[in-house]
Length: 63
Image (cartoon, rainbow, N blue to C red; front, side, top):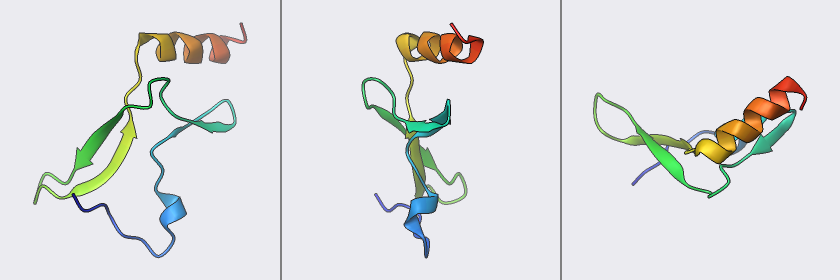
């Protein structure tokens, strides 16, 4: 599995920017994102579960 190579690798993150902070999914699982043209792996993104979504929802609502 080859990830996208950049001059500045800090530009690609496997976290989401939520509430002013970079956050991973609670269970730290990720989804692999592939280029559909050639199947190469471009990046990974957090795989959020229901608990994560509820926490994010309440954070956005200010609860």
